[in-house]
Image (cartoon, rainbow, N blue to C red):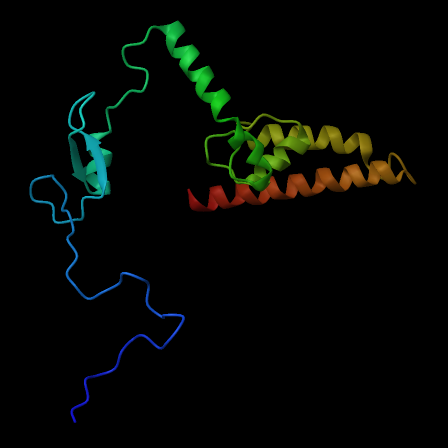
Length: 177
């Protein structure tokens, strides 16, 4: 009696996913001429049409490069639409404490943003402004100025830590550039 080979199914629960098989899978290629990547990003062929192009990520980004969300709207309508979008997406603002979002241009880390907040500075403050603000605030709550004041000592430690975070970030930027 000839042996048929092993099965990947070792009883219940099955180790393979349901519906998995070894048959060929049809992959749609990118609609851009000459591209052999999978076309998994649909893009409309024209406004109000159900027909779609299917591009790879690179060509979808190229296709959408000049797209303007506010095209054809006057200034008031554009502001109303933007306000409505912000209102509908307010849930993302609630997640800021997770460090997923925040103001700034993306060049500063979440720790740097918190340090700027401790110092009471704007997100685009340069290091000279950081140093000035740190010195001014540190002089007010320094342990030598207010000996025995635990609250002032805690505030001084917060200021010191914020300054160290921003100083280290500035040194990294100078080292890179």
